[in-house]
Image (cartoon, rainbow, N blue to C red; front, side, top):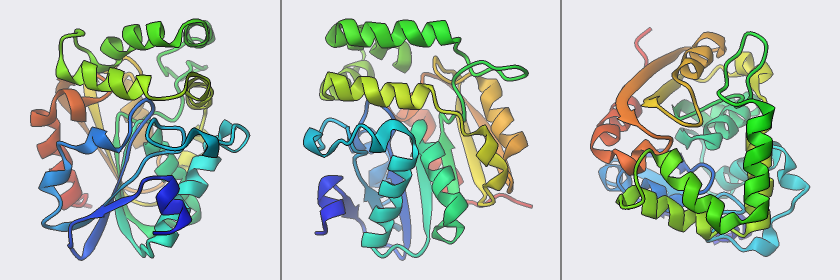
Length: 270
């Protein structure tokens, strides 16, 4: 195993000819895909990994300067694909990892046959003629809460993000992966993600994109999926699912798994 693979806890499962890469979002790790992976291993070579800063990664490897922008994660993704000698893949990115894959595809479109976005947003802040869902004041309060008492913030944020009460398995699972992140790293990553704006790059994304979104999502309003569809440079398609929450693959796997499998298997009809 190479250095990059070890640092990101890369796992390659299944023996199919086509490669599929599953990339998790903020506050989670590769375990967020546990409901989906069993459905893929017979047909695909499945690559899963942890973004730097996630709980299972070594916090000593987290470079605050490198990950002050999404570019650091983009370079990590490209390094993983290179080390695994991936020539082309279907890329499934949840939340921020959707945009990480999109940015990576701008410089290396040859590496991606399609991008599947789950709960994706190019910008979380509201702007003139753009509704991202948050005002700067909202984000400042969120960051201050993380800074003041991270464990308490996790307990409050998890049910809001998942869209369930503390008794639900999905909320408990998200709480666990949130708790596992070192608080100063979680704050840094949260600031990088919530303050990011990649709208200017969307027109450069030419790889086909499948945009999948919950009906109700604390972090991503439904109109954002339409914004992506309208501004991406290549073919795209949107499906809004009858489920709630920012982590639907965890909270509603019975609804989300068949949808993801359909978009993975079938291409956009032009």
